[in-house]
Amino acid sequence: MIRIVTIRQRLCGALSIGRTGRQYDEVAEPEPVSVDTTSSTVASSAGTVSLGHDGAVAVLRVSGALDLALAPKLTQLMDRALRREPALVVVDLTEVDFLASAGMAMLLRAHRGCAPARLHIVADSPITMRPLEMTRLTDELVVYSTLAAALARR
Image (cartoon, rainbow, N blue to C red; front, side):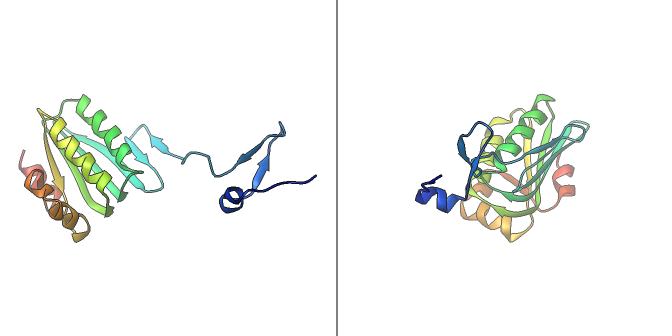
């Protein structure tokens, strides 16, 4: 049996032959996502987003890289939080180790679309504050340095 391997196949990895005799790339599988429905936690390889409720306040805690992989997960839990019509939504970014433009765009869309609820952002490190300041999003978003300060301003 002679097998012709293209450059793409050589770069992307070996071919696999299934029971049907078809060839397929192993690289094309989707990224695994785990969802814990009891505590409203969504995880991907980039990080995790968890949702908690405290009365009329919804708190979303983000850890890892808030980038193109994790921003849709944050949007998903933000939508779930807004269905309960909280008076305040707090997004805690204190455990974020990378803030990409996709994450900042999601925060801006959430800020503009969560009315009548208010959105407070918690960011305390240069990793999260510097991109927010450089893009002047701190002029539009309400940013606090601690979760306690964001919750106190109900």
